[in-house]
Amino acid sequence: MEKKFLKHFFIQVCVLLALAAAVVIVIDPFFHYHSPVSPLKAVVTKAEYQCVGTIDHFDYDSILLGSSVAENFNNRWFDDCFDCKTVKGIKESGTTADLIYYLERAYESHEIENVFYSLDLFALYADTQPTVLGDGMPLYLYNDNPIDDVKYVWNKTVIFEHIPYMAAMSLIGDYDEGMSYNWGQYKTFSAADTVSRYNRLSEKAEVKSADEYVDLIDENISLIEEQIKAHPETNFYIMYPPYSMLWWDNIYMCGELEQYFYALEESARRLSQYDNVRINYYQAEESIILDLNHYMDNIHFSEAINAWMVEQWNTQEYALTSENYTEYVDKMRILVDEIEAYHIKEYYE
Image 1: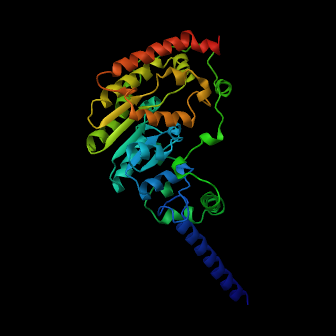
Image 2: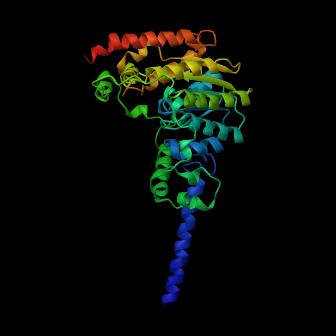
Image 3: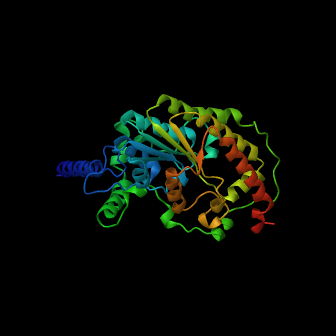
């Protein structure tokens, strides 16, 4: 009797495990095996878990690369502006190597017409090895080893949280698939909040040598250059996102201003020389970076600014070229001087 009970219990457990795995594989909320099955939508909210799956399995011809400041772009803005179909390759605080990893992975399965690259200056002196393959990442979603998929198909969080959430957003909620990874809809943006989250140094640190990170910056720029040269058929649209004046003040107070200006000038000089590259420089737009009501902290701006950045591709107002890049660098230097001399005093004496 006991053996019969154990046999039935074992069979029931196996059936339940098989059903659980089947549900995860069919619905696949992290898109590890396939794109969404109708009527489910591409509910994309967790970049570290879903980014690789969307890059591998979604239908697209263009990719948006960037850190958290790029998450509030709506993919459809690029689709409409450039007549394309866009997916995001996003990594919070993403390094250059992280974004290049996503781009190389996209090229493995897709023909890429456009790369929209939100170029963060701080990413240019990060480690040149991708952190997306490091400790703490769900590597079972990144590799081709079916054995460790057990961490996905029998994951209680996936089964009891992510699948119900995906179903609810698809069938009940008014989820916009273009706003993948968007966080701005849940935040408030105001000067008061921005200032409250900024802990300004009481004294200016010793100024660091301008060439302290030159080799690392040059290596990171080379990572981008290699992709540009390897894919002349692809249009690279590079944009420098507008950090607030508090971000520039922090760099100044930390004594790292010259290092960032080297990263800016050298990346602008080297990347602007290619025929398949267009660059827009937004960091010196005073109406944005001096108005802290656009921000929630010293770097993260509202999705209205993301929309504005896309709109500017239809103009030439912010176009940075091999002929005028030094003018933008000089303009930014002057603006930082003005921030330290006048604008920061509105908030800090």
